[in-house]
Amino acid sequence: PPPLVIVGASYAGTQLADSLRRLGYDAPIIMLGDEAHAPYQRPPLSKGLLSGKSSAASLALKGPDFFREQDIELRLGTRAVALDPGRQTLSLADGSALRYGGLALATGARCRTLALPGASLAGVHNLRTLDDALALDAALSGASRACIIGGGFIGLEAAAALTGRGLKVTLIETHPQLLARSLPAAMACYLEQKQRDGGVDIRLGQGVRQLRGAAGRVTGVELADGSVLDCDLVVLGIGVQPNDELARQAGIACDNGILTDALGRTDAPHVYAIGDVANALQPEVPGMPRRLRLESIQAANDGARALASALAGRPEPYTGAPWFWSDQFALKLQMAGLALPGDETVIRGDMAADRFSVFYLRNGRIAAAHSINRPGEHMLSRKLISAAIPATPEMLRDESFDLKHLAA
Ligand code: FAD
Image (cartoon, rainbow, N blue to C red; front, side):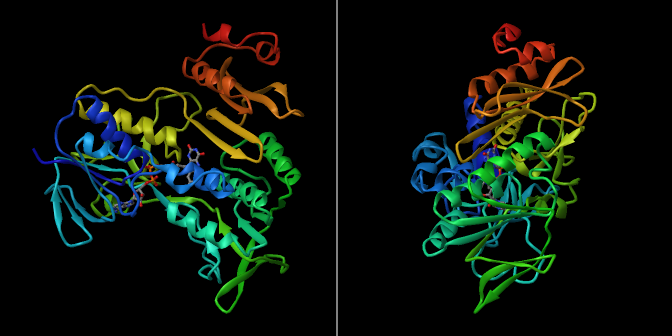
């Protein structure tokens, strides 16, 4: 039979191939990736690797023999450039074409570019790929001041890591709150204070006018108010955009990513999309958006598992809660579910000691939980959210009440 072709050799693509083989799928699988590296872990790029605590060699997603043993043909340094869903062919950058039986787009996302003067100066770094991280790491020797543009997870993790490496770090965010896309204000303010305590100079509500440079290298960031922050390097953490061009150009429905059902199917026969590039239909929950394009390891892996189940003839959509984590200084933030404005918030534990969870209650059930340095509570909250367990603020607040009783 013609092969299943997977475009994108990262979390979603690798999990799809792995799950298919586990389910006994025995058609040929070809996985294409345009990066030079075999699939690797991305989260450490802004955490352990950037802090100097882990090495590039430790980041491989799979052991060296995995792809051969599972009979998955991995072609690195190979870019797909066009898709013809009618003929079921994929064109590659080298001019060749592949005929497919099924095509999974797992092309992920790329960093948004800064549309301002000076954005292409040397010393301005993105942080998405291993090569980006290695380039940033190499630039740290000899640098003493860094500016980070963007107060999302990547920006905050980079701020903590670079501070730990001895740089003086200023983080600039246009919005008056950090993490405005991901966290309610109270949790964002808590993290802001922790960043400040760690030594990061945080500038909120500040626009950037341009990057200044000399001899082709960045020397500073000019803010909208005309002031200039001198620096040796800039890290951009201003979000990503989905790599959905292959689908778009083929006429497949896209809107903030490739539109799919809960199993990863697009509106073109035999074409699927999973991971950061997919804007997937969600289970119907009052108050929740019908579609989400999540940017997380969990969504990539669980989306891939759901698609594998469909391709293997045993369709099983993911019904659990979304989850995510972030490491900054000594804090491990773990998030489960999606908090919405209007949720009742309950704090369990000791905020002053940096060991607590914030629970978000909606209609008498736990809808989301954000835990700081409480991994056990995070794991439990994932179960409680998925099972829509009723809970009261009193139970959650009372640390003598064992939350395991709720799950039982
Ligand atoms: P990607 O990992 O983006 O991979 C897509 C691959 O496809 C890339 O290699 C790309 O080059 C390739 N590709 C694209 N187009 C083509 C083409 N036409 N032909 C061939 N190949 C192509 N998530 C968490 O849950 N927790 C974290 O703590 C966390 N930290 C992160 C830290 C950093 C620095 C970054 C960058 C991301 C982090 N994420 C985290 C997000 C997480 O890494 C992504 O959600 C995840 O990588 C998505 O996987 P994916 O397979 O969908 O896409």
